[in-house]
Length: 88
Image 1 (cartoon, helix red, strand yellow):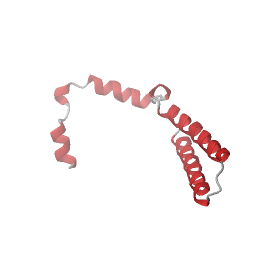
Image 2 (cartoon, helix red, strand yellow; image 1 turned 45 degrees about the vertical axis):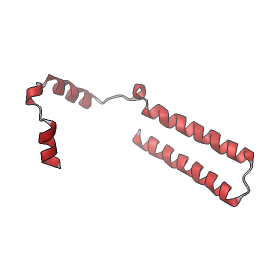
Image 3 (spheres, one colour; image 1 turned 90 degrees about the horizontal axis):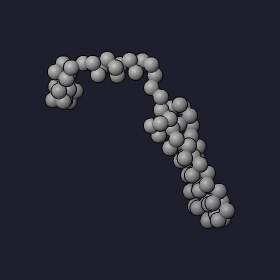
Image 4 (cartoon, helix red, strand yellow; image 1 turned 90 degrees about the vertical axis):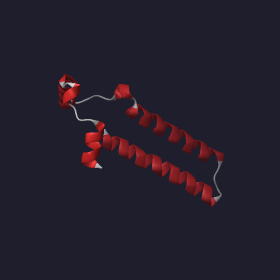
């Protein structure tokens, strides 16, 4: 899924670069701008669908880890300060 997202981002980037190229040349037509905007809209809609929470699925490994962590009493967990001391 990440690869698909990355490839979509690259193609989105190429649309933007193409639009900038047309604009810099001064020979852009309204049809070209409209085509690029519609293509950008399609790309953004697709990227939004990847980001939406409903479309994401957790792996079984992650589901098990979440279940285990929920069973851990809060008193056994490290505080924010302890984590900051260790990593900052």
